[in-house]
Length: 333
Image (cartoon, rainbow, N blue to C red; front, side, top):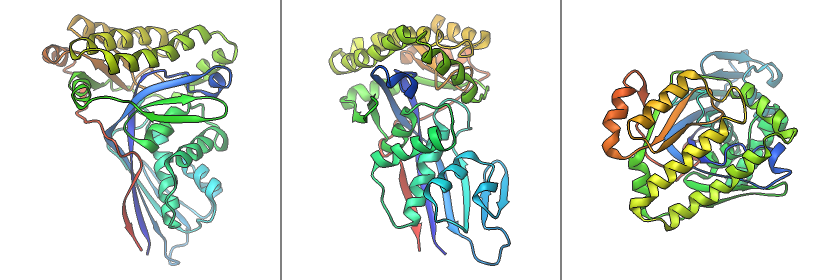
């Protein structure tokens, strides 16, 4: 029996989110700046013997026992298997360090990890660029989700990256950052779970409709510029200046993001954010499409106890940055 286990990280997007939607970057250049963290989606695949009457067993928050790909309810699994073909009798188990629908790109992390595992089952090592491109194809075209293109590239490549989007190419390049400044970012970043899960497809739908009507272009063009301003700050600002400047930029970005859709924030989130600023945070944002999920904050370490006290009812995510991206961690023939 063959068995494969893949491990794929989730991401935090700091700047440029929204410019990674094809509806936007087919008209204007797009770019994002973000990082993967050491919270993962794990996918185990092994071949099924002929003893079972079903051909596909899928275990996640529910269990599916089906005979054909078309019967599968999980959209990404159905889409990936339809895209790849050639897998008729397999057992799939999914587990994650964090809940789904919370803004850290877990759905794309899954798609990237599942495709990576399927290629490994065939004895193939797929290049990270191709892996990300195929994940975009599955999510955007095969199953028709309203998703952007940054999450798949973050998940595949790993690390802290600037990703640039155009109609002809999506290019990922590592952010040039010293070890000291990377530790500074790590030590100033707090992430809290708001307890609200949401279906990003619904939030993004309104945003994409506005983008197609050109209503959001002025906001998105500014958000695109902010990616390179943040990169310049990280490269050239002193360690004393870097976090207040990045926090101010993040605060501006959050204000712009709220203009993209009426569903991106709500009074509860706005109150949390204001409390964080009053207790010393430089700036922050909701991760992902918005409306819930995880709240990321840049704040000086001396302000952390005061913010944690105000957010005592919320779960905090303790994390480290990671650099590996999509990885096969176990393989047995």
